[in-house]
Amino acid sequence: MDAVRALESHADQTIPGTSSLLRNWKRWEAGEVEPDDFYKPLIAKTFGTVSAAFFPRAGHRNAEAELLEGVGMNTLEFVSRLRTSDVSPATLEALRITADRLCSEYPYMSPEQLSIEGHAWLRRICNLLDRRLTLSQHQEVLSLAGTVSLLIGCVEYDMGQRHEARATRRAAQSLGEEAGDADVMGWAHEMAAWFAITQGDYRGVIAASNAGEFVAHNRSVTVQLAAQKAKAWARIGDRREMEKALDHGRAILETLPYPEDVDHHFVVDPSKFDFYAMDCYRLFGDNERAAVYADEVIRSSTDADGTQRKPMRIAEAEITLGVVAAREGDVERAVSLGRQAISGERKSLPSLLMVSGELRQILAKQYPTEQEAAAYLEELRALGARDA
Image (cartoon, rainbow, N blue to C red; front, side, top):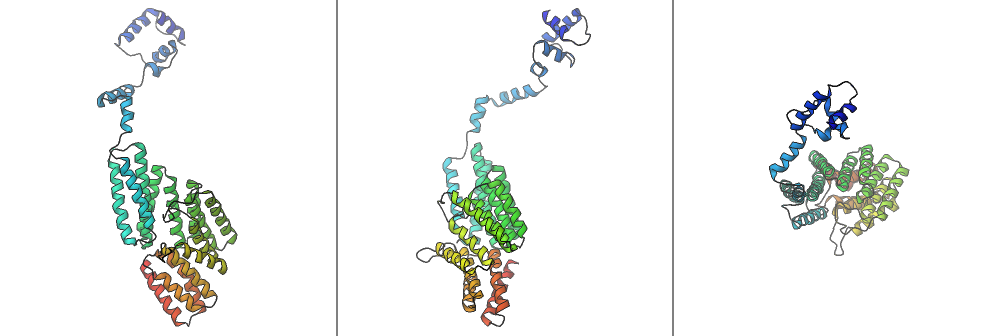
């Protein structure tokens, strides 16, 4: 009776008499009927709460109860299930080691072999997504798949498979976004910048580099993004912006620890930055600086026994020295270095052709009657046909 009187006091409009309301109240308490939408807020107000506390939406609470009862789990069991896995830590560690190995073999392994191995390991990694994984393991598998996809995309582009490389790059970026891996996302943008610069889209390089820096912040990839931007500004002809980009990259590189594995393709070490600086100064005709950087790139990319550890960097350094020689009138040395650069088995065709284009222009313009120069130009044309 007290509850009914309290309800009457909370009503802002006329309601049925006390005796009628009392009969309804007893029916509500007995569960015979449910109060309508007019009475629900009044009842809740009477008890100092809200309607949803007394009258949850149909099916919401029951659905949760049914879910728990149906699987026979309480909340603790659910959380424990999320922390269990069919994949051992040793398996994931083996995959990490393999992914790093593949990335470290990129500079010298044949692209065909690297592509085969990369695709095989990507399938193995992706198969784990069908297994029961913890949340952290799921994220790590996505990151590993993103890293190997990046590598495959680089190899595809090296071999002139541009359409495949673009699709693989987009897939890697998507995996990075799903995993929340800023490194994978940053390198995906760096690949877009690399693709753009080899195709003469210099504004595209700058846009991709800016997008990569936005997601990567001060990581190793940010150094390379700055370097790609410097190369683009150099080709546009803006030395001030080029120097700013190089300085920005150097400043970030100074804050990073020296990498454990300088052969890893997705790591930037000081010698790799020298490689980019070499390209920039060659473009601006700073022969002395370009040659100094080129010599350093060759030295740091060659083992003590003479084995070329990074043949693709060495090839571009040889082209740089060939450009300097051609500018200084030594056409014989220029052609010799140019031939040496394109003769290696491990090539990145788009990058090599882009850099060789500068030597080609100088030889064609300044030495049109030199037979050796003409022969070399024909070799370049044949190489370019492979990338078409």
